[in-house]
Length: 232
Image (cartoon, rainbow, N blue to C red; front, top):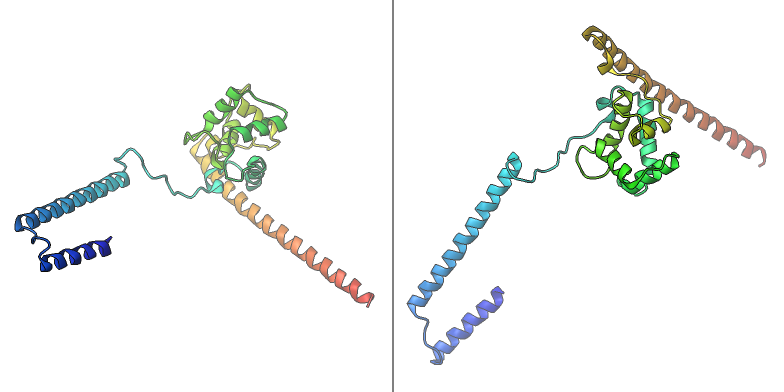
């Protein structure tokens, strides 16, 4: 576009020199200059409005706020459950997350309930999601999935509700109560310490299991090599 404009200016100057065109009047030049200034002012005003809008969004004044980037850690947020329980819940969640998008939508929940032997109506499935759908996106995140078992353990689900049926048929034992179940502050403190010790013990157990599996694998490989050398 800049090249075309330069070409037009050169052609106009050539015509003026040849007498084929009158020079541009001074008033016209002033008029063009005023138009350019007006365009620049308009652009500045638009940029200022955009910057103000962005500032409002960042401060939470605007209608649409950016989603929180807080990292979700199930082991620290759901301390009432053991690592094994959470891993079992995660395994179940991933099993029915057929699209692998880290969500269970209505159709995936429908399949889950059918596999568990407790099929639900379309309205029933929507109500199940609605009961724990904190961000109102119409599907279950892993955190919202864990909320089902938290509510089940706390006795907050109606026995005839779909979520209560899901928790009961999942074969995941959530009968243990966390710090919130303690009756006194002292009991809560003691239970918190026990939870911390249990957490560390579970990690050590997992590490020992992995070490044991690695050692067994090493022994199998050594035995296989010894068997191969016997046939050479």
